[in-house]
Length: 67
Image 1 (cartoon, rainbow, N blue to C red):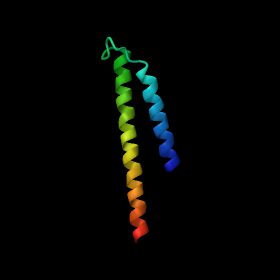
Image 2 (cartoon, one colour):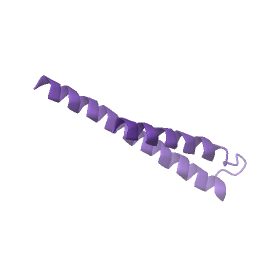
Image 3 (tube, rainbow, N blue to C red):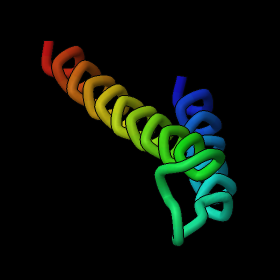
Image 4 (tube, rainbow, N blue to C red):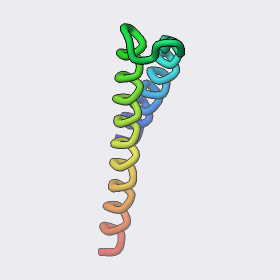
């Protein structure tokens, strides 16, 4: 599970980096720039969810260790 979350996190970061090059700063909400912004937002949400998953797995492991 840990390797899976790391792979997904790295791919989300790569996706953010790639799409940040596609944004036209003169018109960020039109055409391909809007799609790039939406994709960056989706990748950021994926990173946030993966961090929540990692933290919940750590808490679960600590609770099991105490019992």
